[in-house]
Length: 304
Ligand SMILES: [Zn+2]
Image: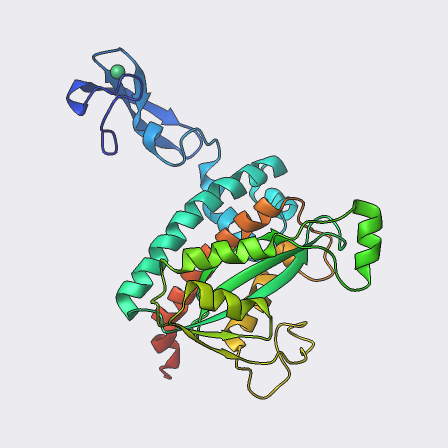
């Protein structure tokens, strides 16, 4: 009775609970302890209080998590692990919930280990839901130099450029939630960043206003955006030295690893909240990868 502290029906304490045999869980071939409550007679098990409670395919979770952050689309993942595509859709939501908690903890652990964050890079990634005529913006903040994401939001914006008129004709006027989203993100950043943090931003006119409002003691430098090189497709720059490399690299990496953000893809986002879920899972896997790289760096450096 490891994780069990109370009865799920009558809230009886652990002293009222007794062991009541085992059952074989076919899904992952495990023996699970059954538990009975002496007060109300309700039977449950050690699996009742685990995060995977009521899942039918527990073994796929790690693979799905990894594949979602490795540029695979839900249909291919479903084929790979042998489940229905709807199971992958459900697992995306489940994994995202856990990823958000994990990401928060990992960030706190990073601050504990490396001290307060000194410099942050900030920029927006543009994508769309359903059609190019319905763009979305993803404001993202990363730690300078280590490209660990601090937070992001997903917000609808009106179409711009040559698509603006077409978009209005087809879908009507589209609301602009970007200001609200950036405000929300900066409010959340106040909890993790020291007040005298330094921001590196591009020429976007909204950013200095945000910094002054949420971090009055903070400083910032503006670096003009340069032409992209082909490999980064806009995010990675052709110049010799890119002052905003951390954020540009992070955005290029998200585009490459989150399938629905690829350029010229037919795997498009249908719901902005699912895009947010997907990015949360990506960040979770990314921090694991960065951690792994850091751990094994010295081993690769040693030559025989
Ligand atoms: Zn009970």
